[in-house]
Length: 111
Length: 112
Image 1: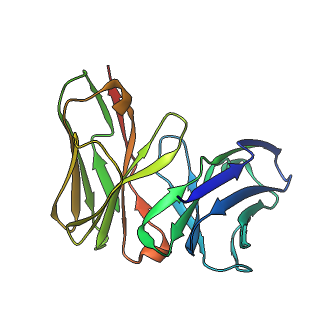
Image 2: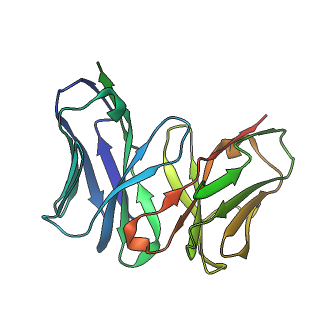
């Protein structure tokens, strides 16, 4: 069964203090690794898909990277509006009709 | 216009009741999903539909019955509600399954 583990569970940052979130995964044949952002009381919002080791994607202050065993989401010089729960999910080549999610990392950025 | 909309947003009901959650997407996507998010924020797939056909039923009790009247709608009917069914239920849709899914705002179901 596909497994996704995210760490840390919670992260408190000062505005401007860069940091990284980790997503380690086990899947038999990775089709894609997804990052989502979820704000309280809302549905997850798609951020990135990574398909192969070595790939990187960027969006504003966020940068996602992928290796064969894990993915990192780097937050550079975060602002309070970056506060959210960040979810990682994997999609297996054998079954691309489902995403297997990790439990998320809740990021709080203080001004 | 909301891309994936669910109704109702909140649902409080008693054990043993039957309830439905409706989902509509206006993105023209072929694939729709139901996910359940428990109190620990863990999102888990329940059902996937492609062109109105059931593709995945992820060991969900048969008290849960999805229905897709057309490609734009995927409703979830739940019979004989139990306390453990309390959670947030998310509908989602995608066109290209490798490019991520769009999620609705969720339905918070509380069974008392």
